[in-house]
Image 1 (tube, one colour):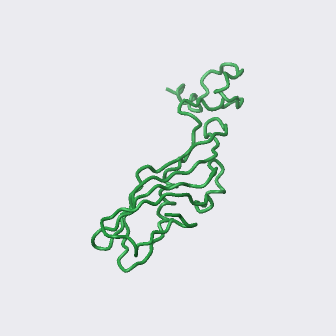
Image 2 (cartoon, helix red, strand yellow):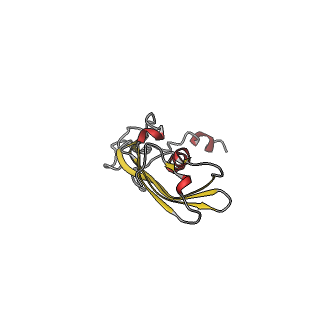
Image 3 (cartoon, one colour):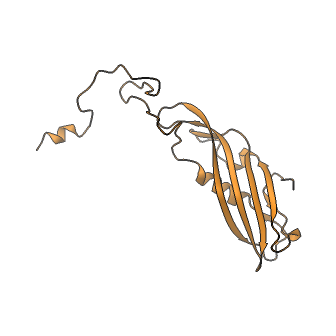
Length: 159
C-alpha cells in the first residue's frame, strides 16, 4: 500500500481481525523539529506498522517508527549522525463510523518522545575541559592541575 503525505488508514476497506501492513516514509518536515539546535532530521521518517480492525470499532496500530538525525553532542559538541526509533509503537483508536483515520500526529508524538533530550555521540564521551574547552575525546588538555575546582570547596574548610 503506497503511503500519501500523511499516515492515513482507509478504515472502510479493512476487514475485522485481518491485519494490514503499512510501510513507507513521510517528510521530515511533518516532525516540526527543524529549529532544534542539537537534533535535526537528516532524512524522511520511516514507518513499518500493522493495523488491525478490532471488534467494537477500534483500530490497533503497532510497529516501528524511526528517523535519521544529524546531532550535536551535548558533552563535547561534535557532530554525529544517529537514527532514533520507537520500536514498540502501539496505539488504539476509536474508528466507529469513520471511513479513514490519520495516524500522523500519534506517530509524530511517539517519535518525538524517542528523541533524547541531550544527544551524546557515544556512551563514553568525555566531554570538554571546563577550563580550556579542549575536547577530551581527542586527548588530554594542557591545563595545569588545579586544586579543588569545586565551587563548594571553601565551605569544606568552615568545619
